[in-house]
Image 1 (tube, rainbow, N blue to C red):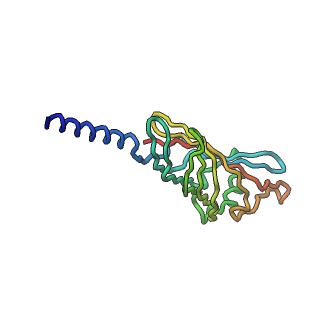
Image 2: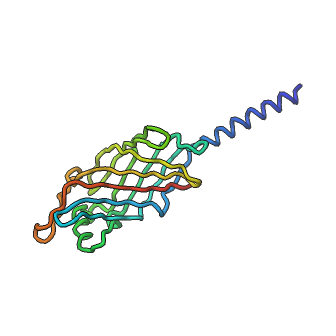
Image 3: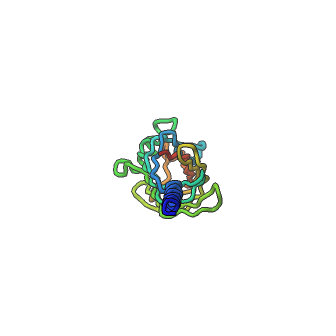
Amino acid sequence: MKTNRIKLIAFVVAIFGITSLATAQKSYTLDSKSTFSVAGTSTLHDWEMKSASGTGTATLNIANGKLTDIDALAITLLAESVKSEKKSMDKVAYETLKTDKNKNIKYVLKSAEKVNETTWELTGTYTIAGVSKVYKTNVKTTVTKDGLNLQGTNKITFSDFGMKSPTAMLGTIKTGQDLTLKFNLNFNL
């Protein structure tokens, strides 16, 4: 009788241990395949600048192949890692971003709310050109064999972050005020 009771207790403890292990929070690191871009318009043409050199971490709960919670998320991107196909455009962009004083672009999660199985609404603080603003962002999530993929976009403006729309060629080429931030983030153990 005592042996059966000990076996039952051991079985219950093992089940609870496995369940706890399956739903435990884990820290994930941003991998090198993650990409970032910013796109806009000008009086000459549409443009896009890209980077693949961000760093970051996320504290996530993944249970039974599904994302159940996003507890923390922080991304840092070296501002001068964002590049276009033209060095002259990069120079103007870095002046606009005030990279001499603000070396990084940052994002820090404040809260995450599940919309459905593959969509979450993130509320977080973007810091660009030394100015911080809170935005809501809908992201598509995909659980991978290694961790999690997050994809999303945000619409912002230069003035949101205290920046003036860049101009070139003595003001004859003007950049539109609206920008689209795009990201494709992979977090792996």
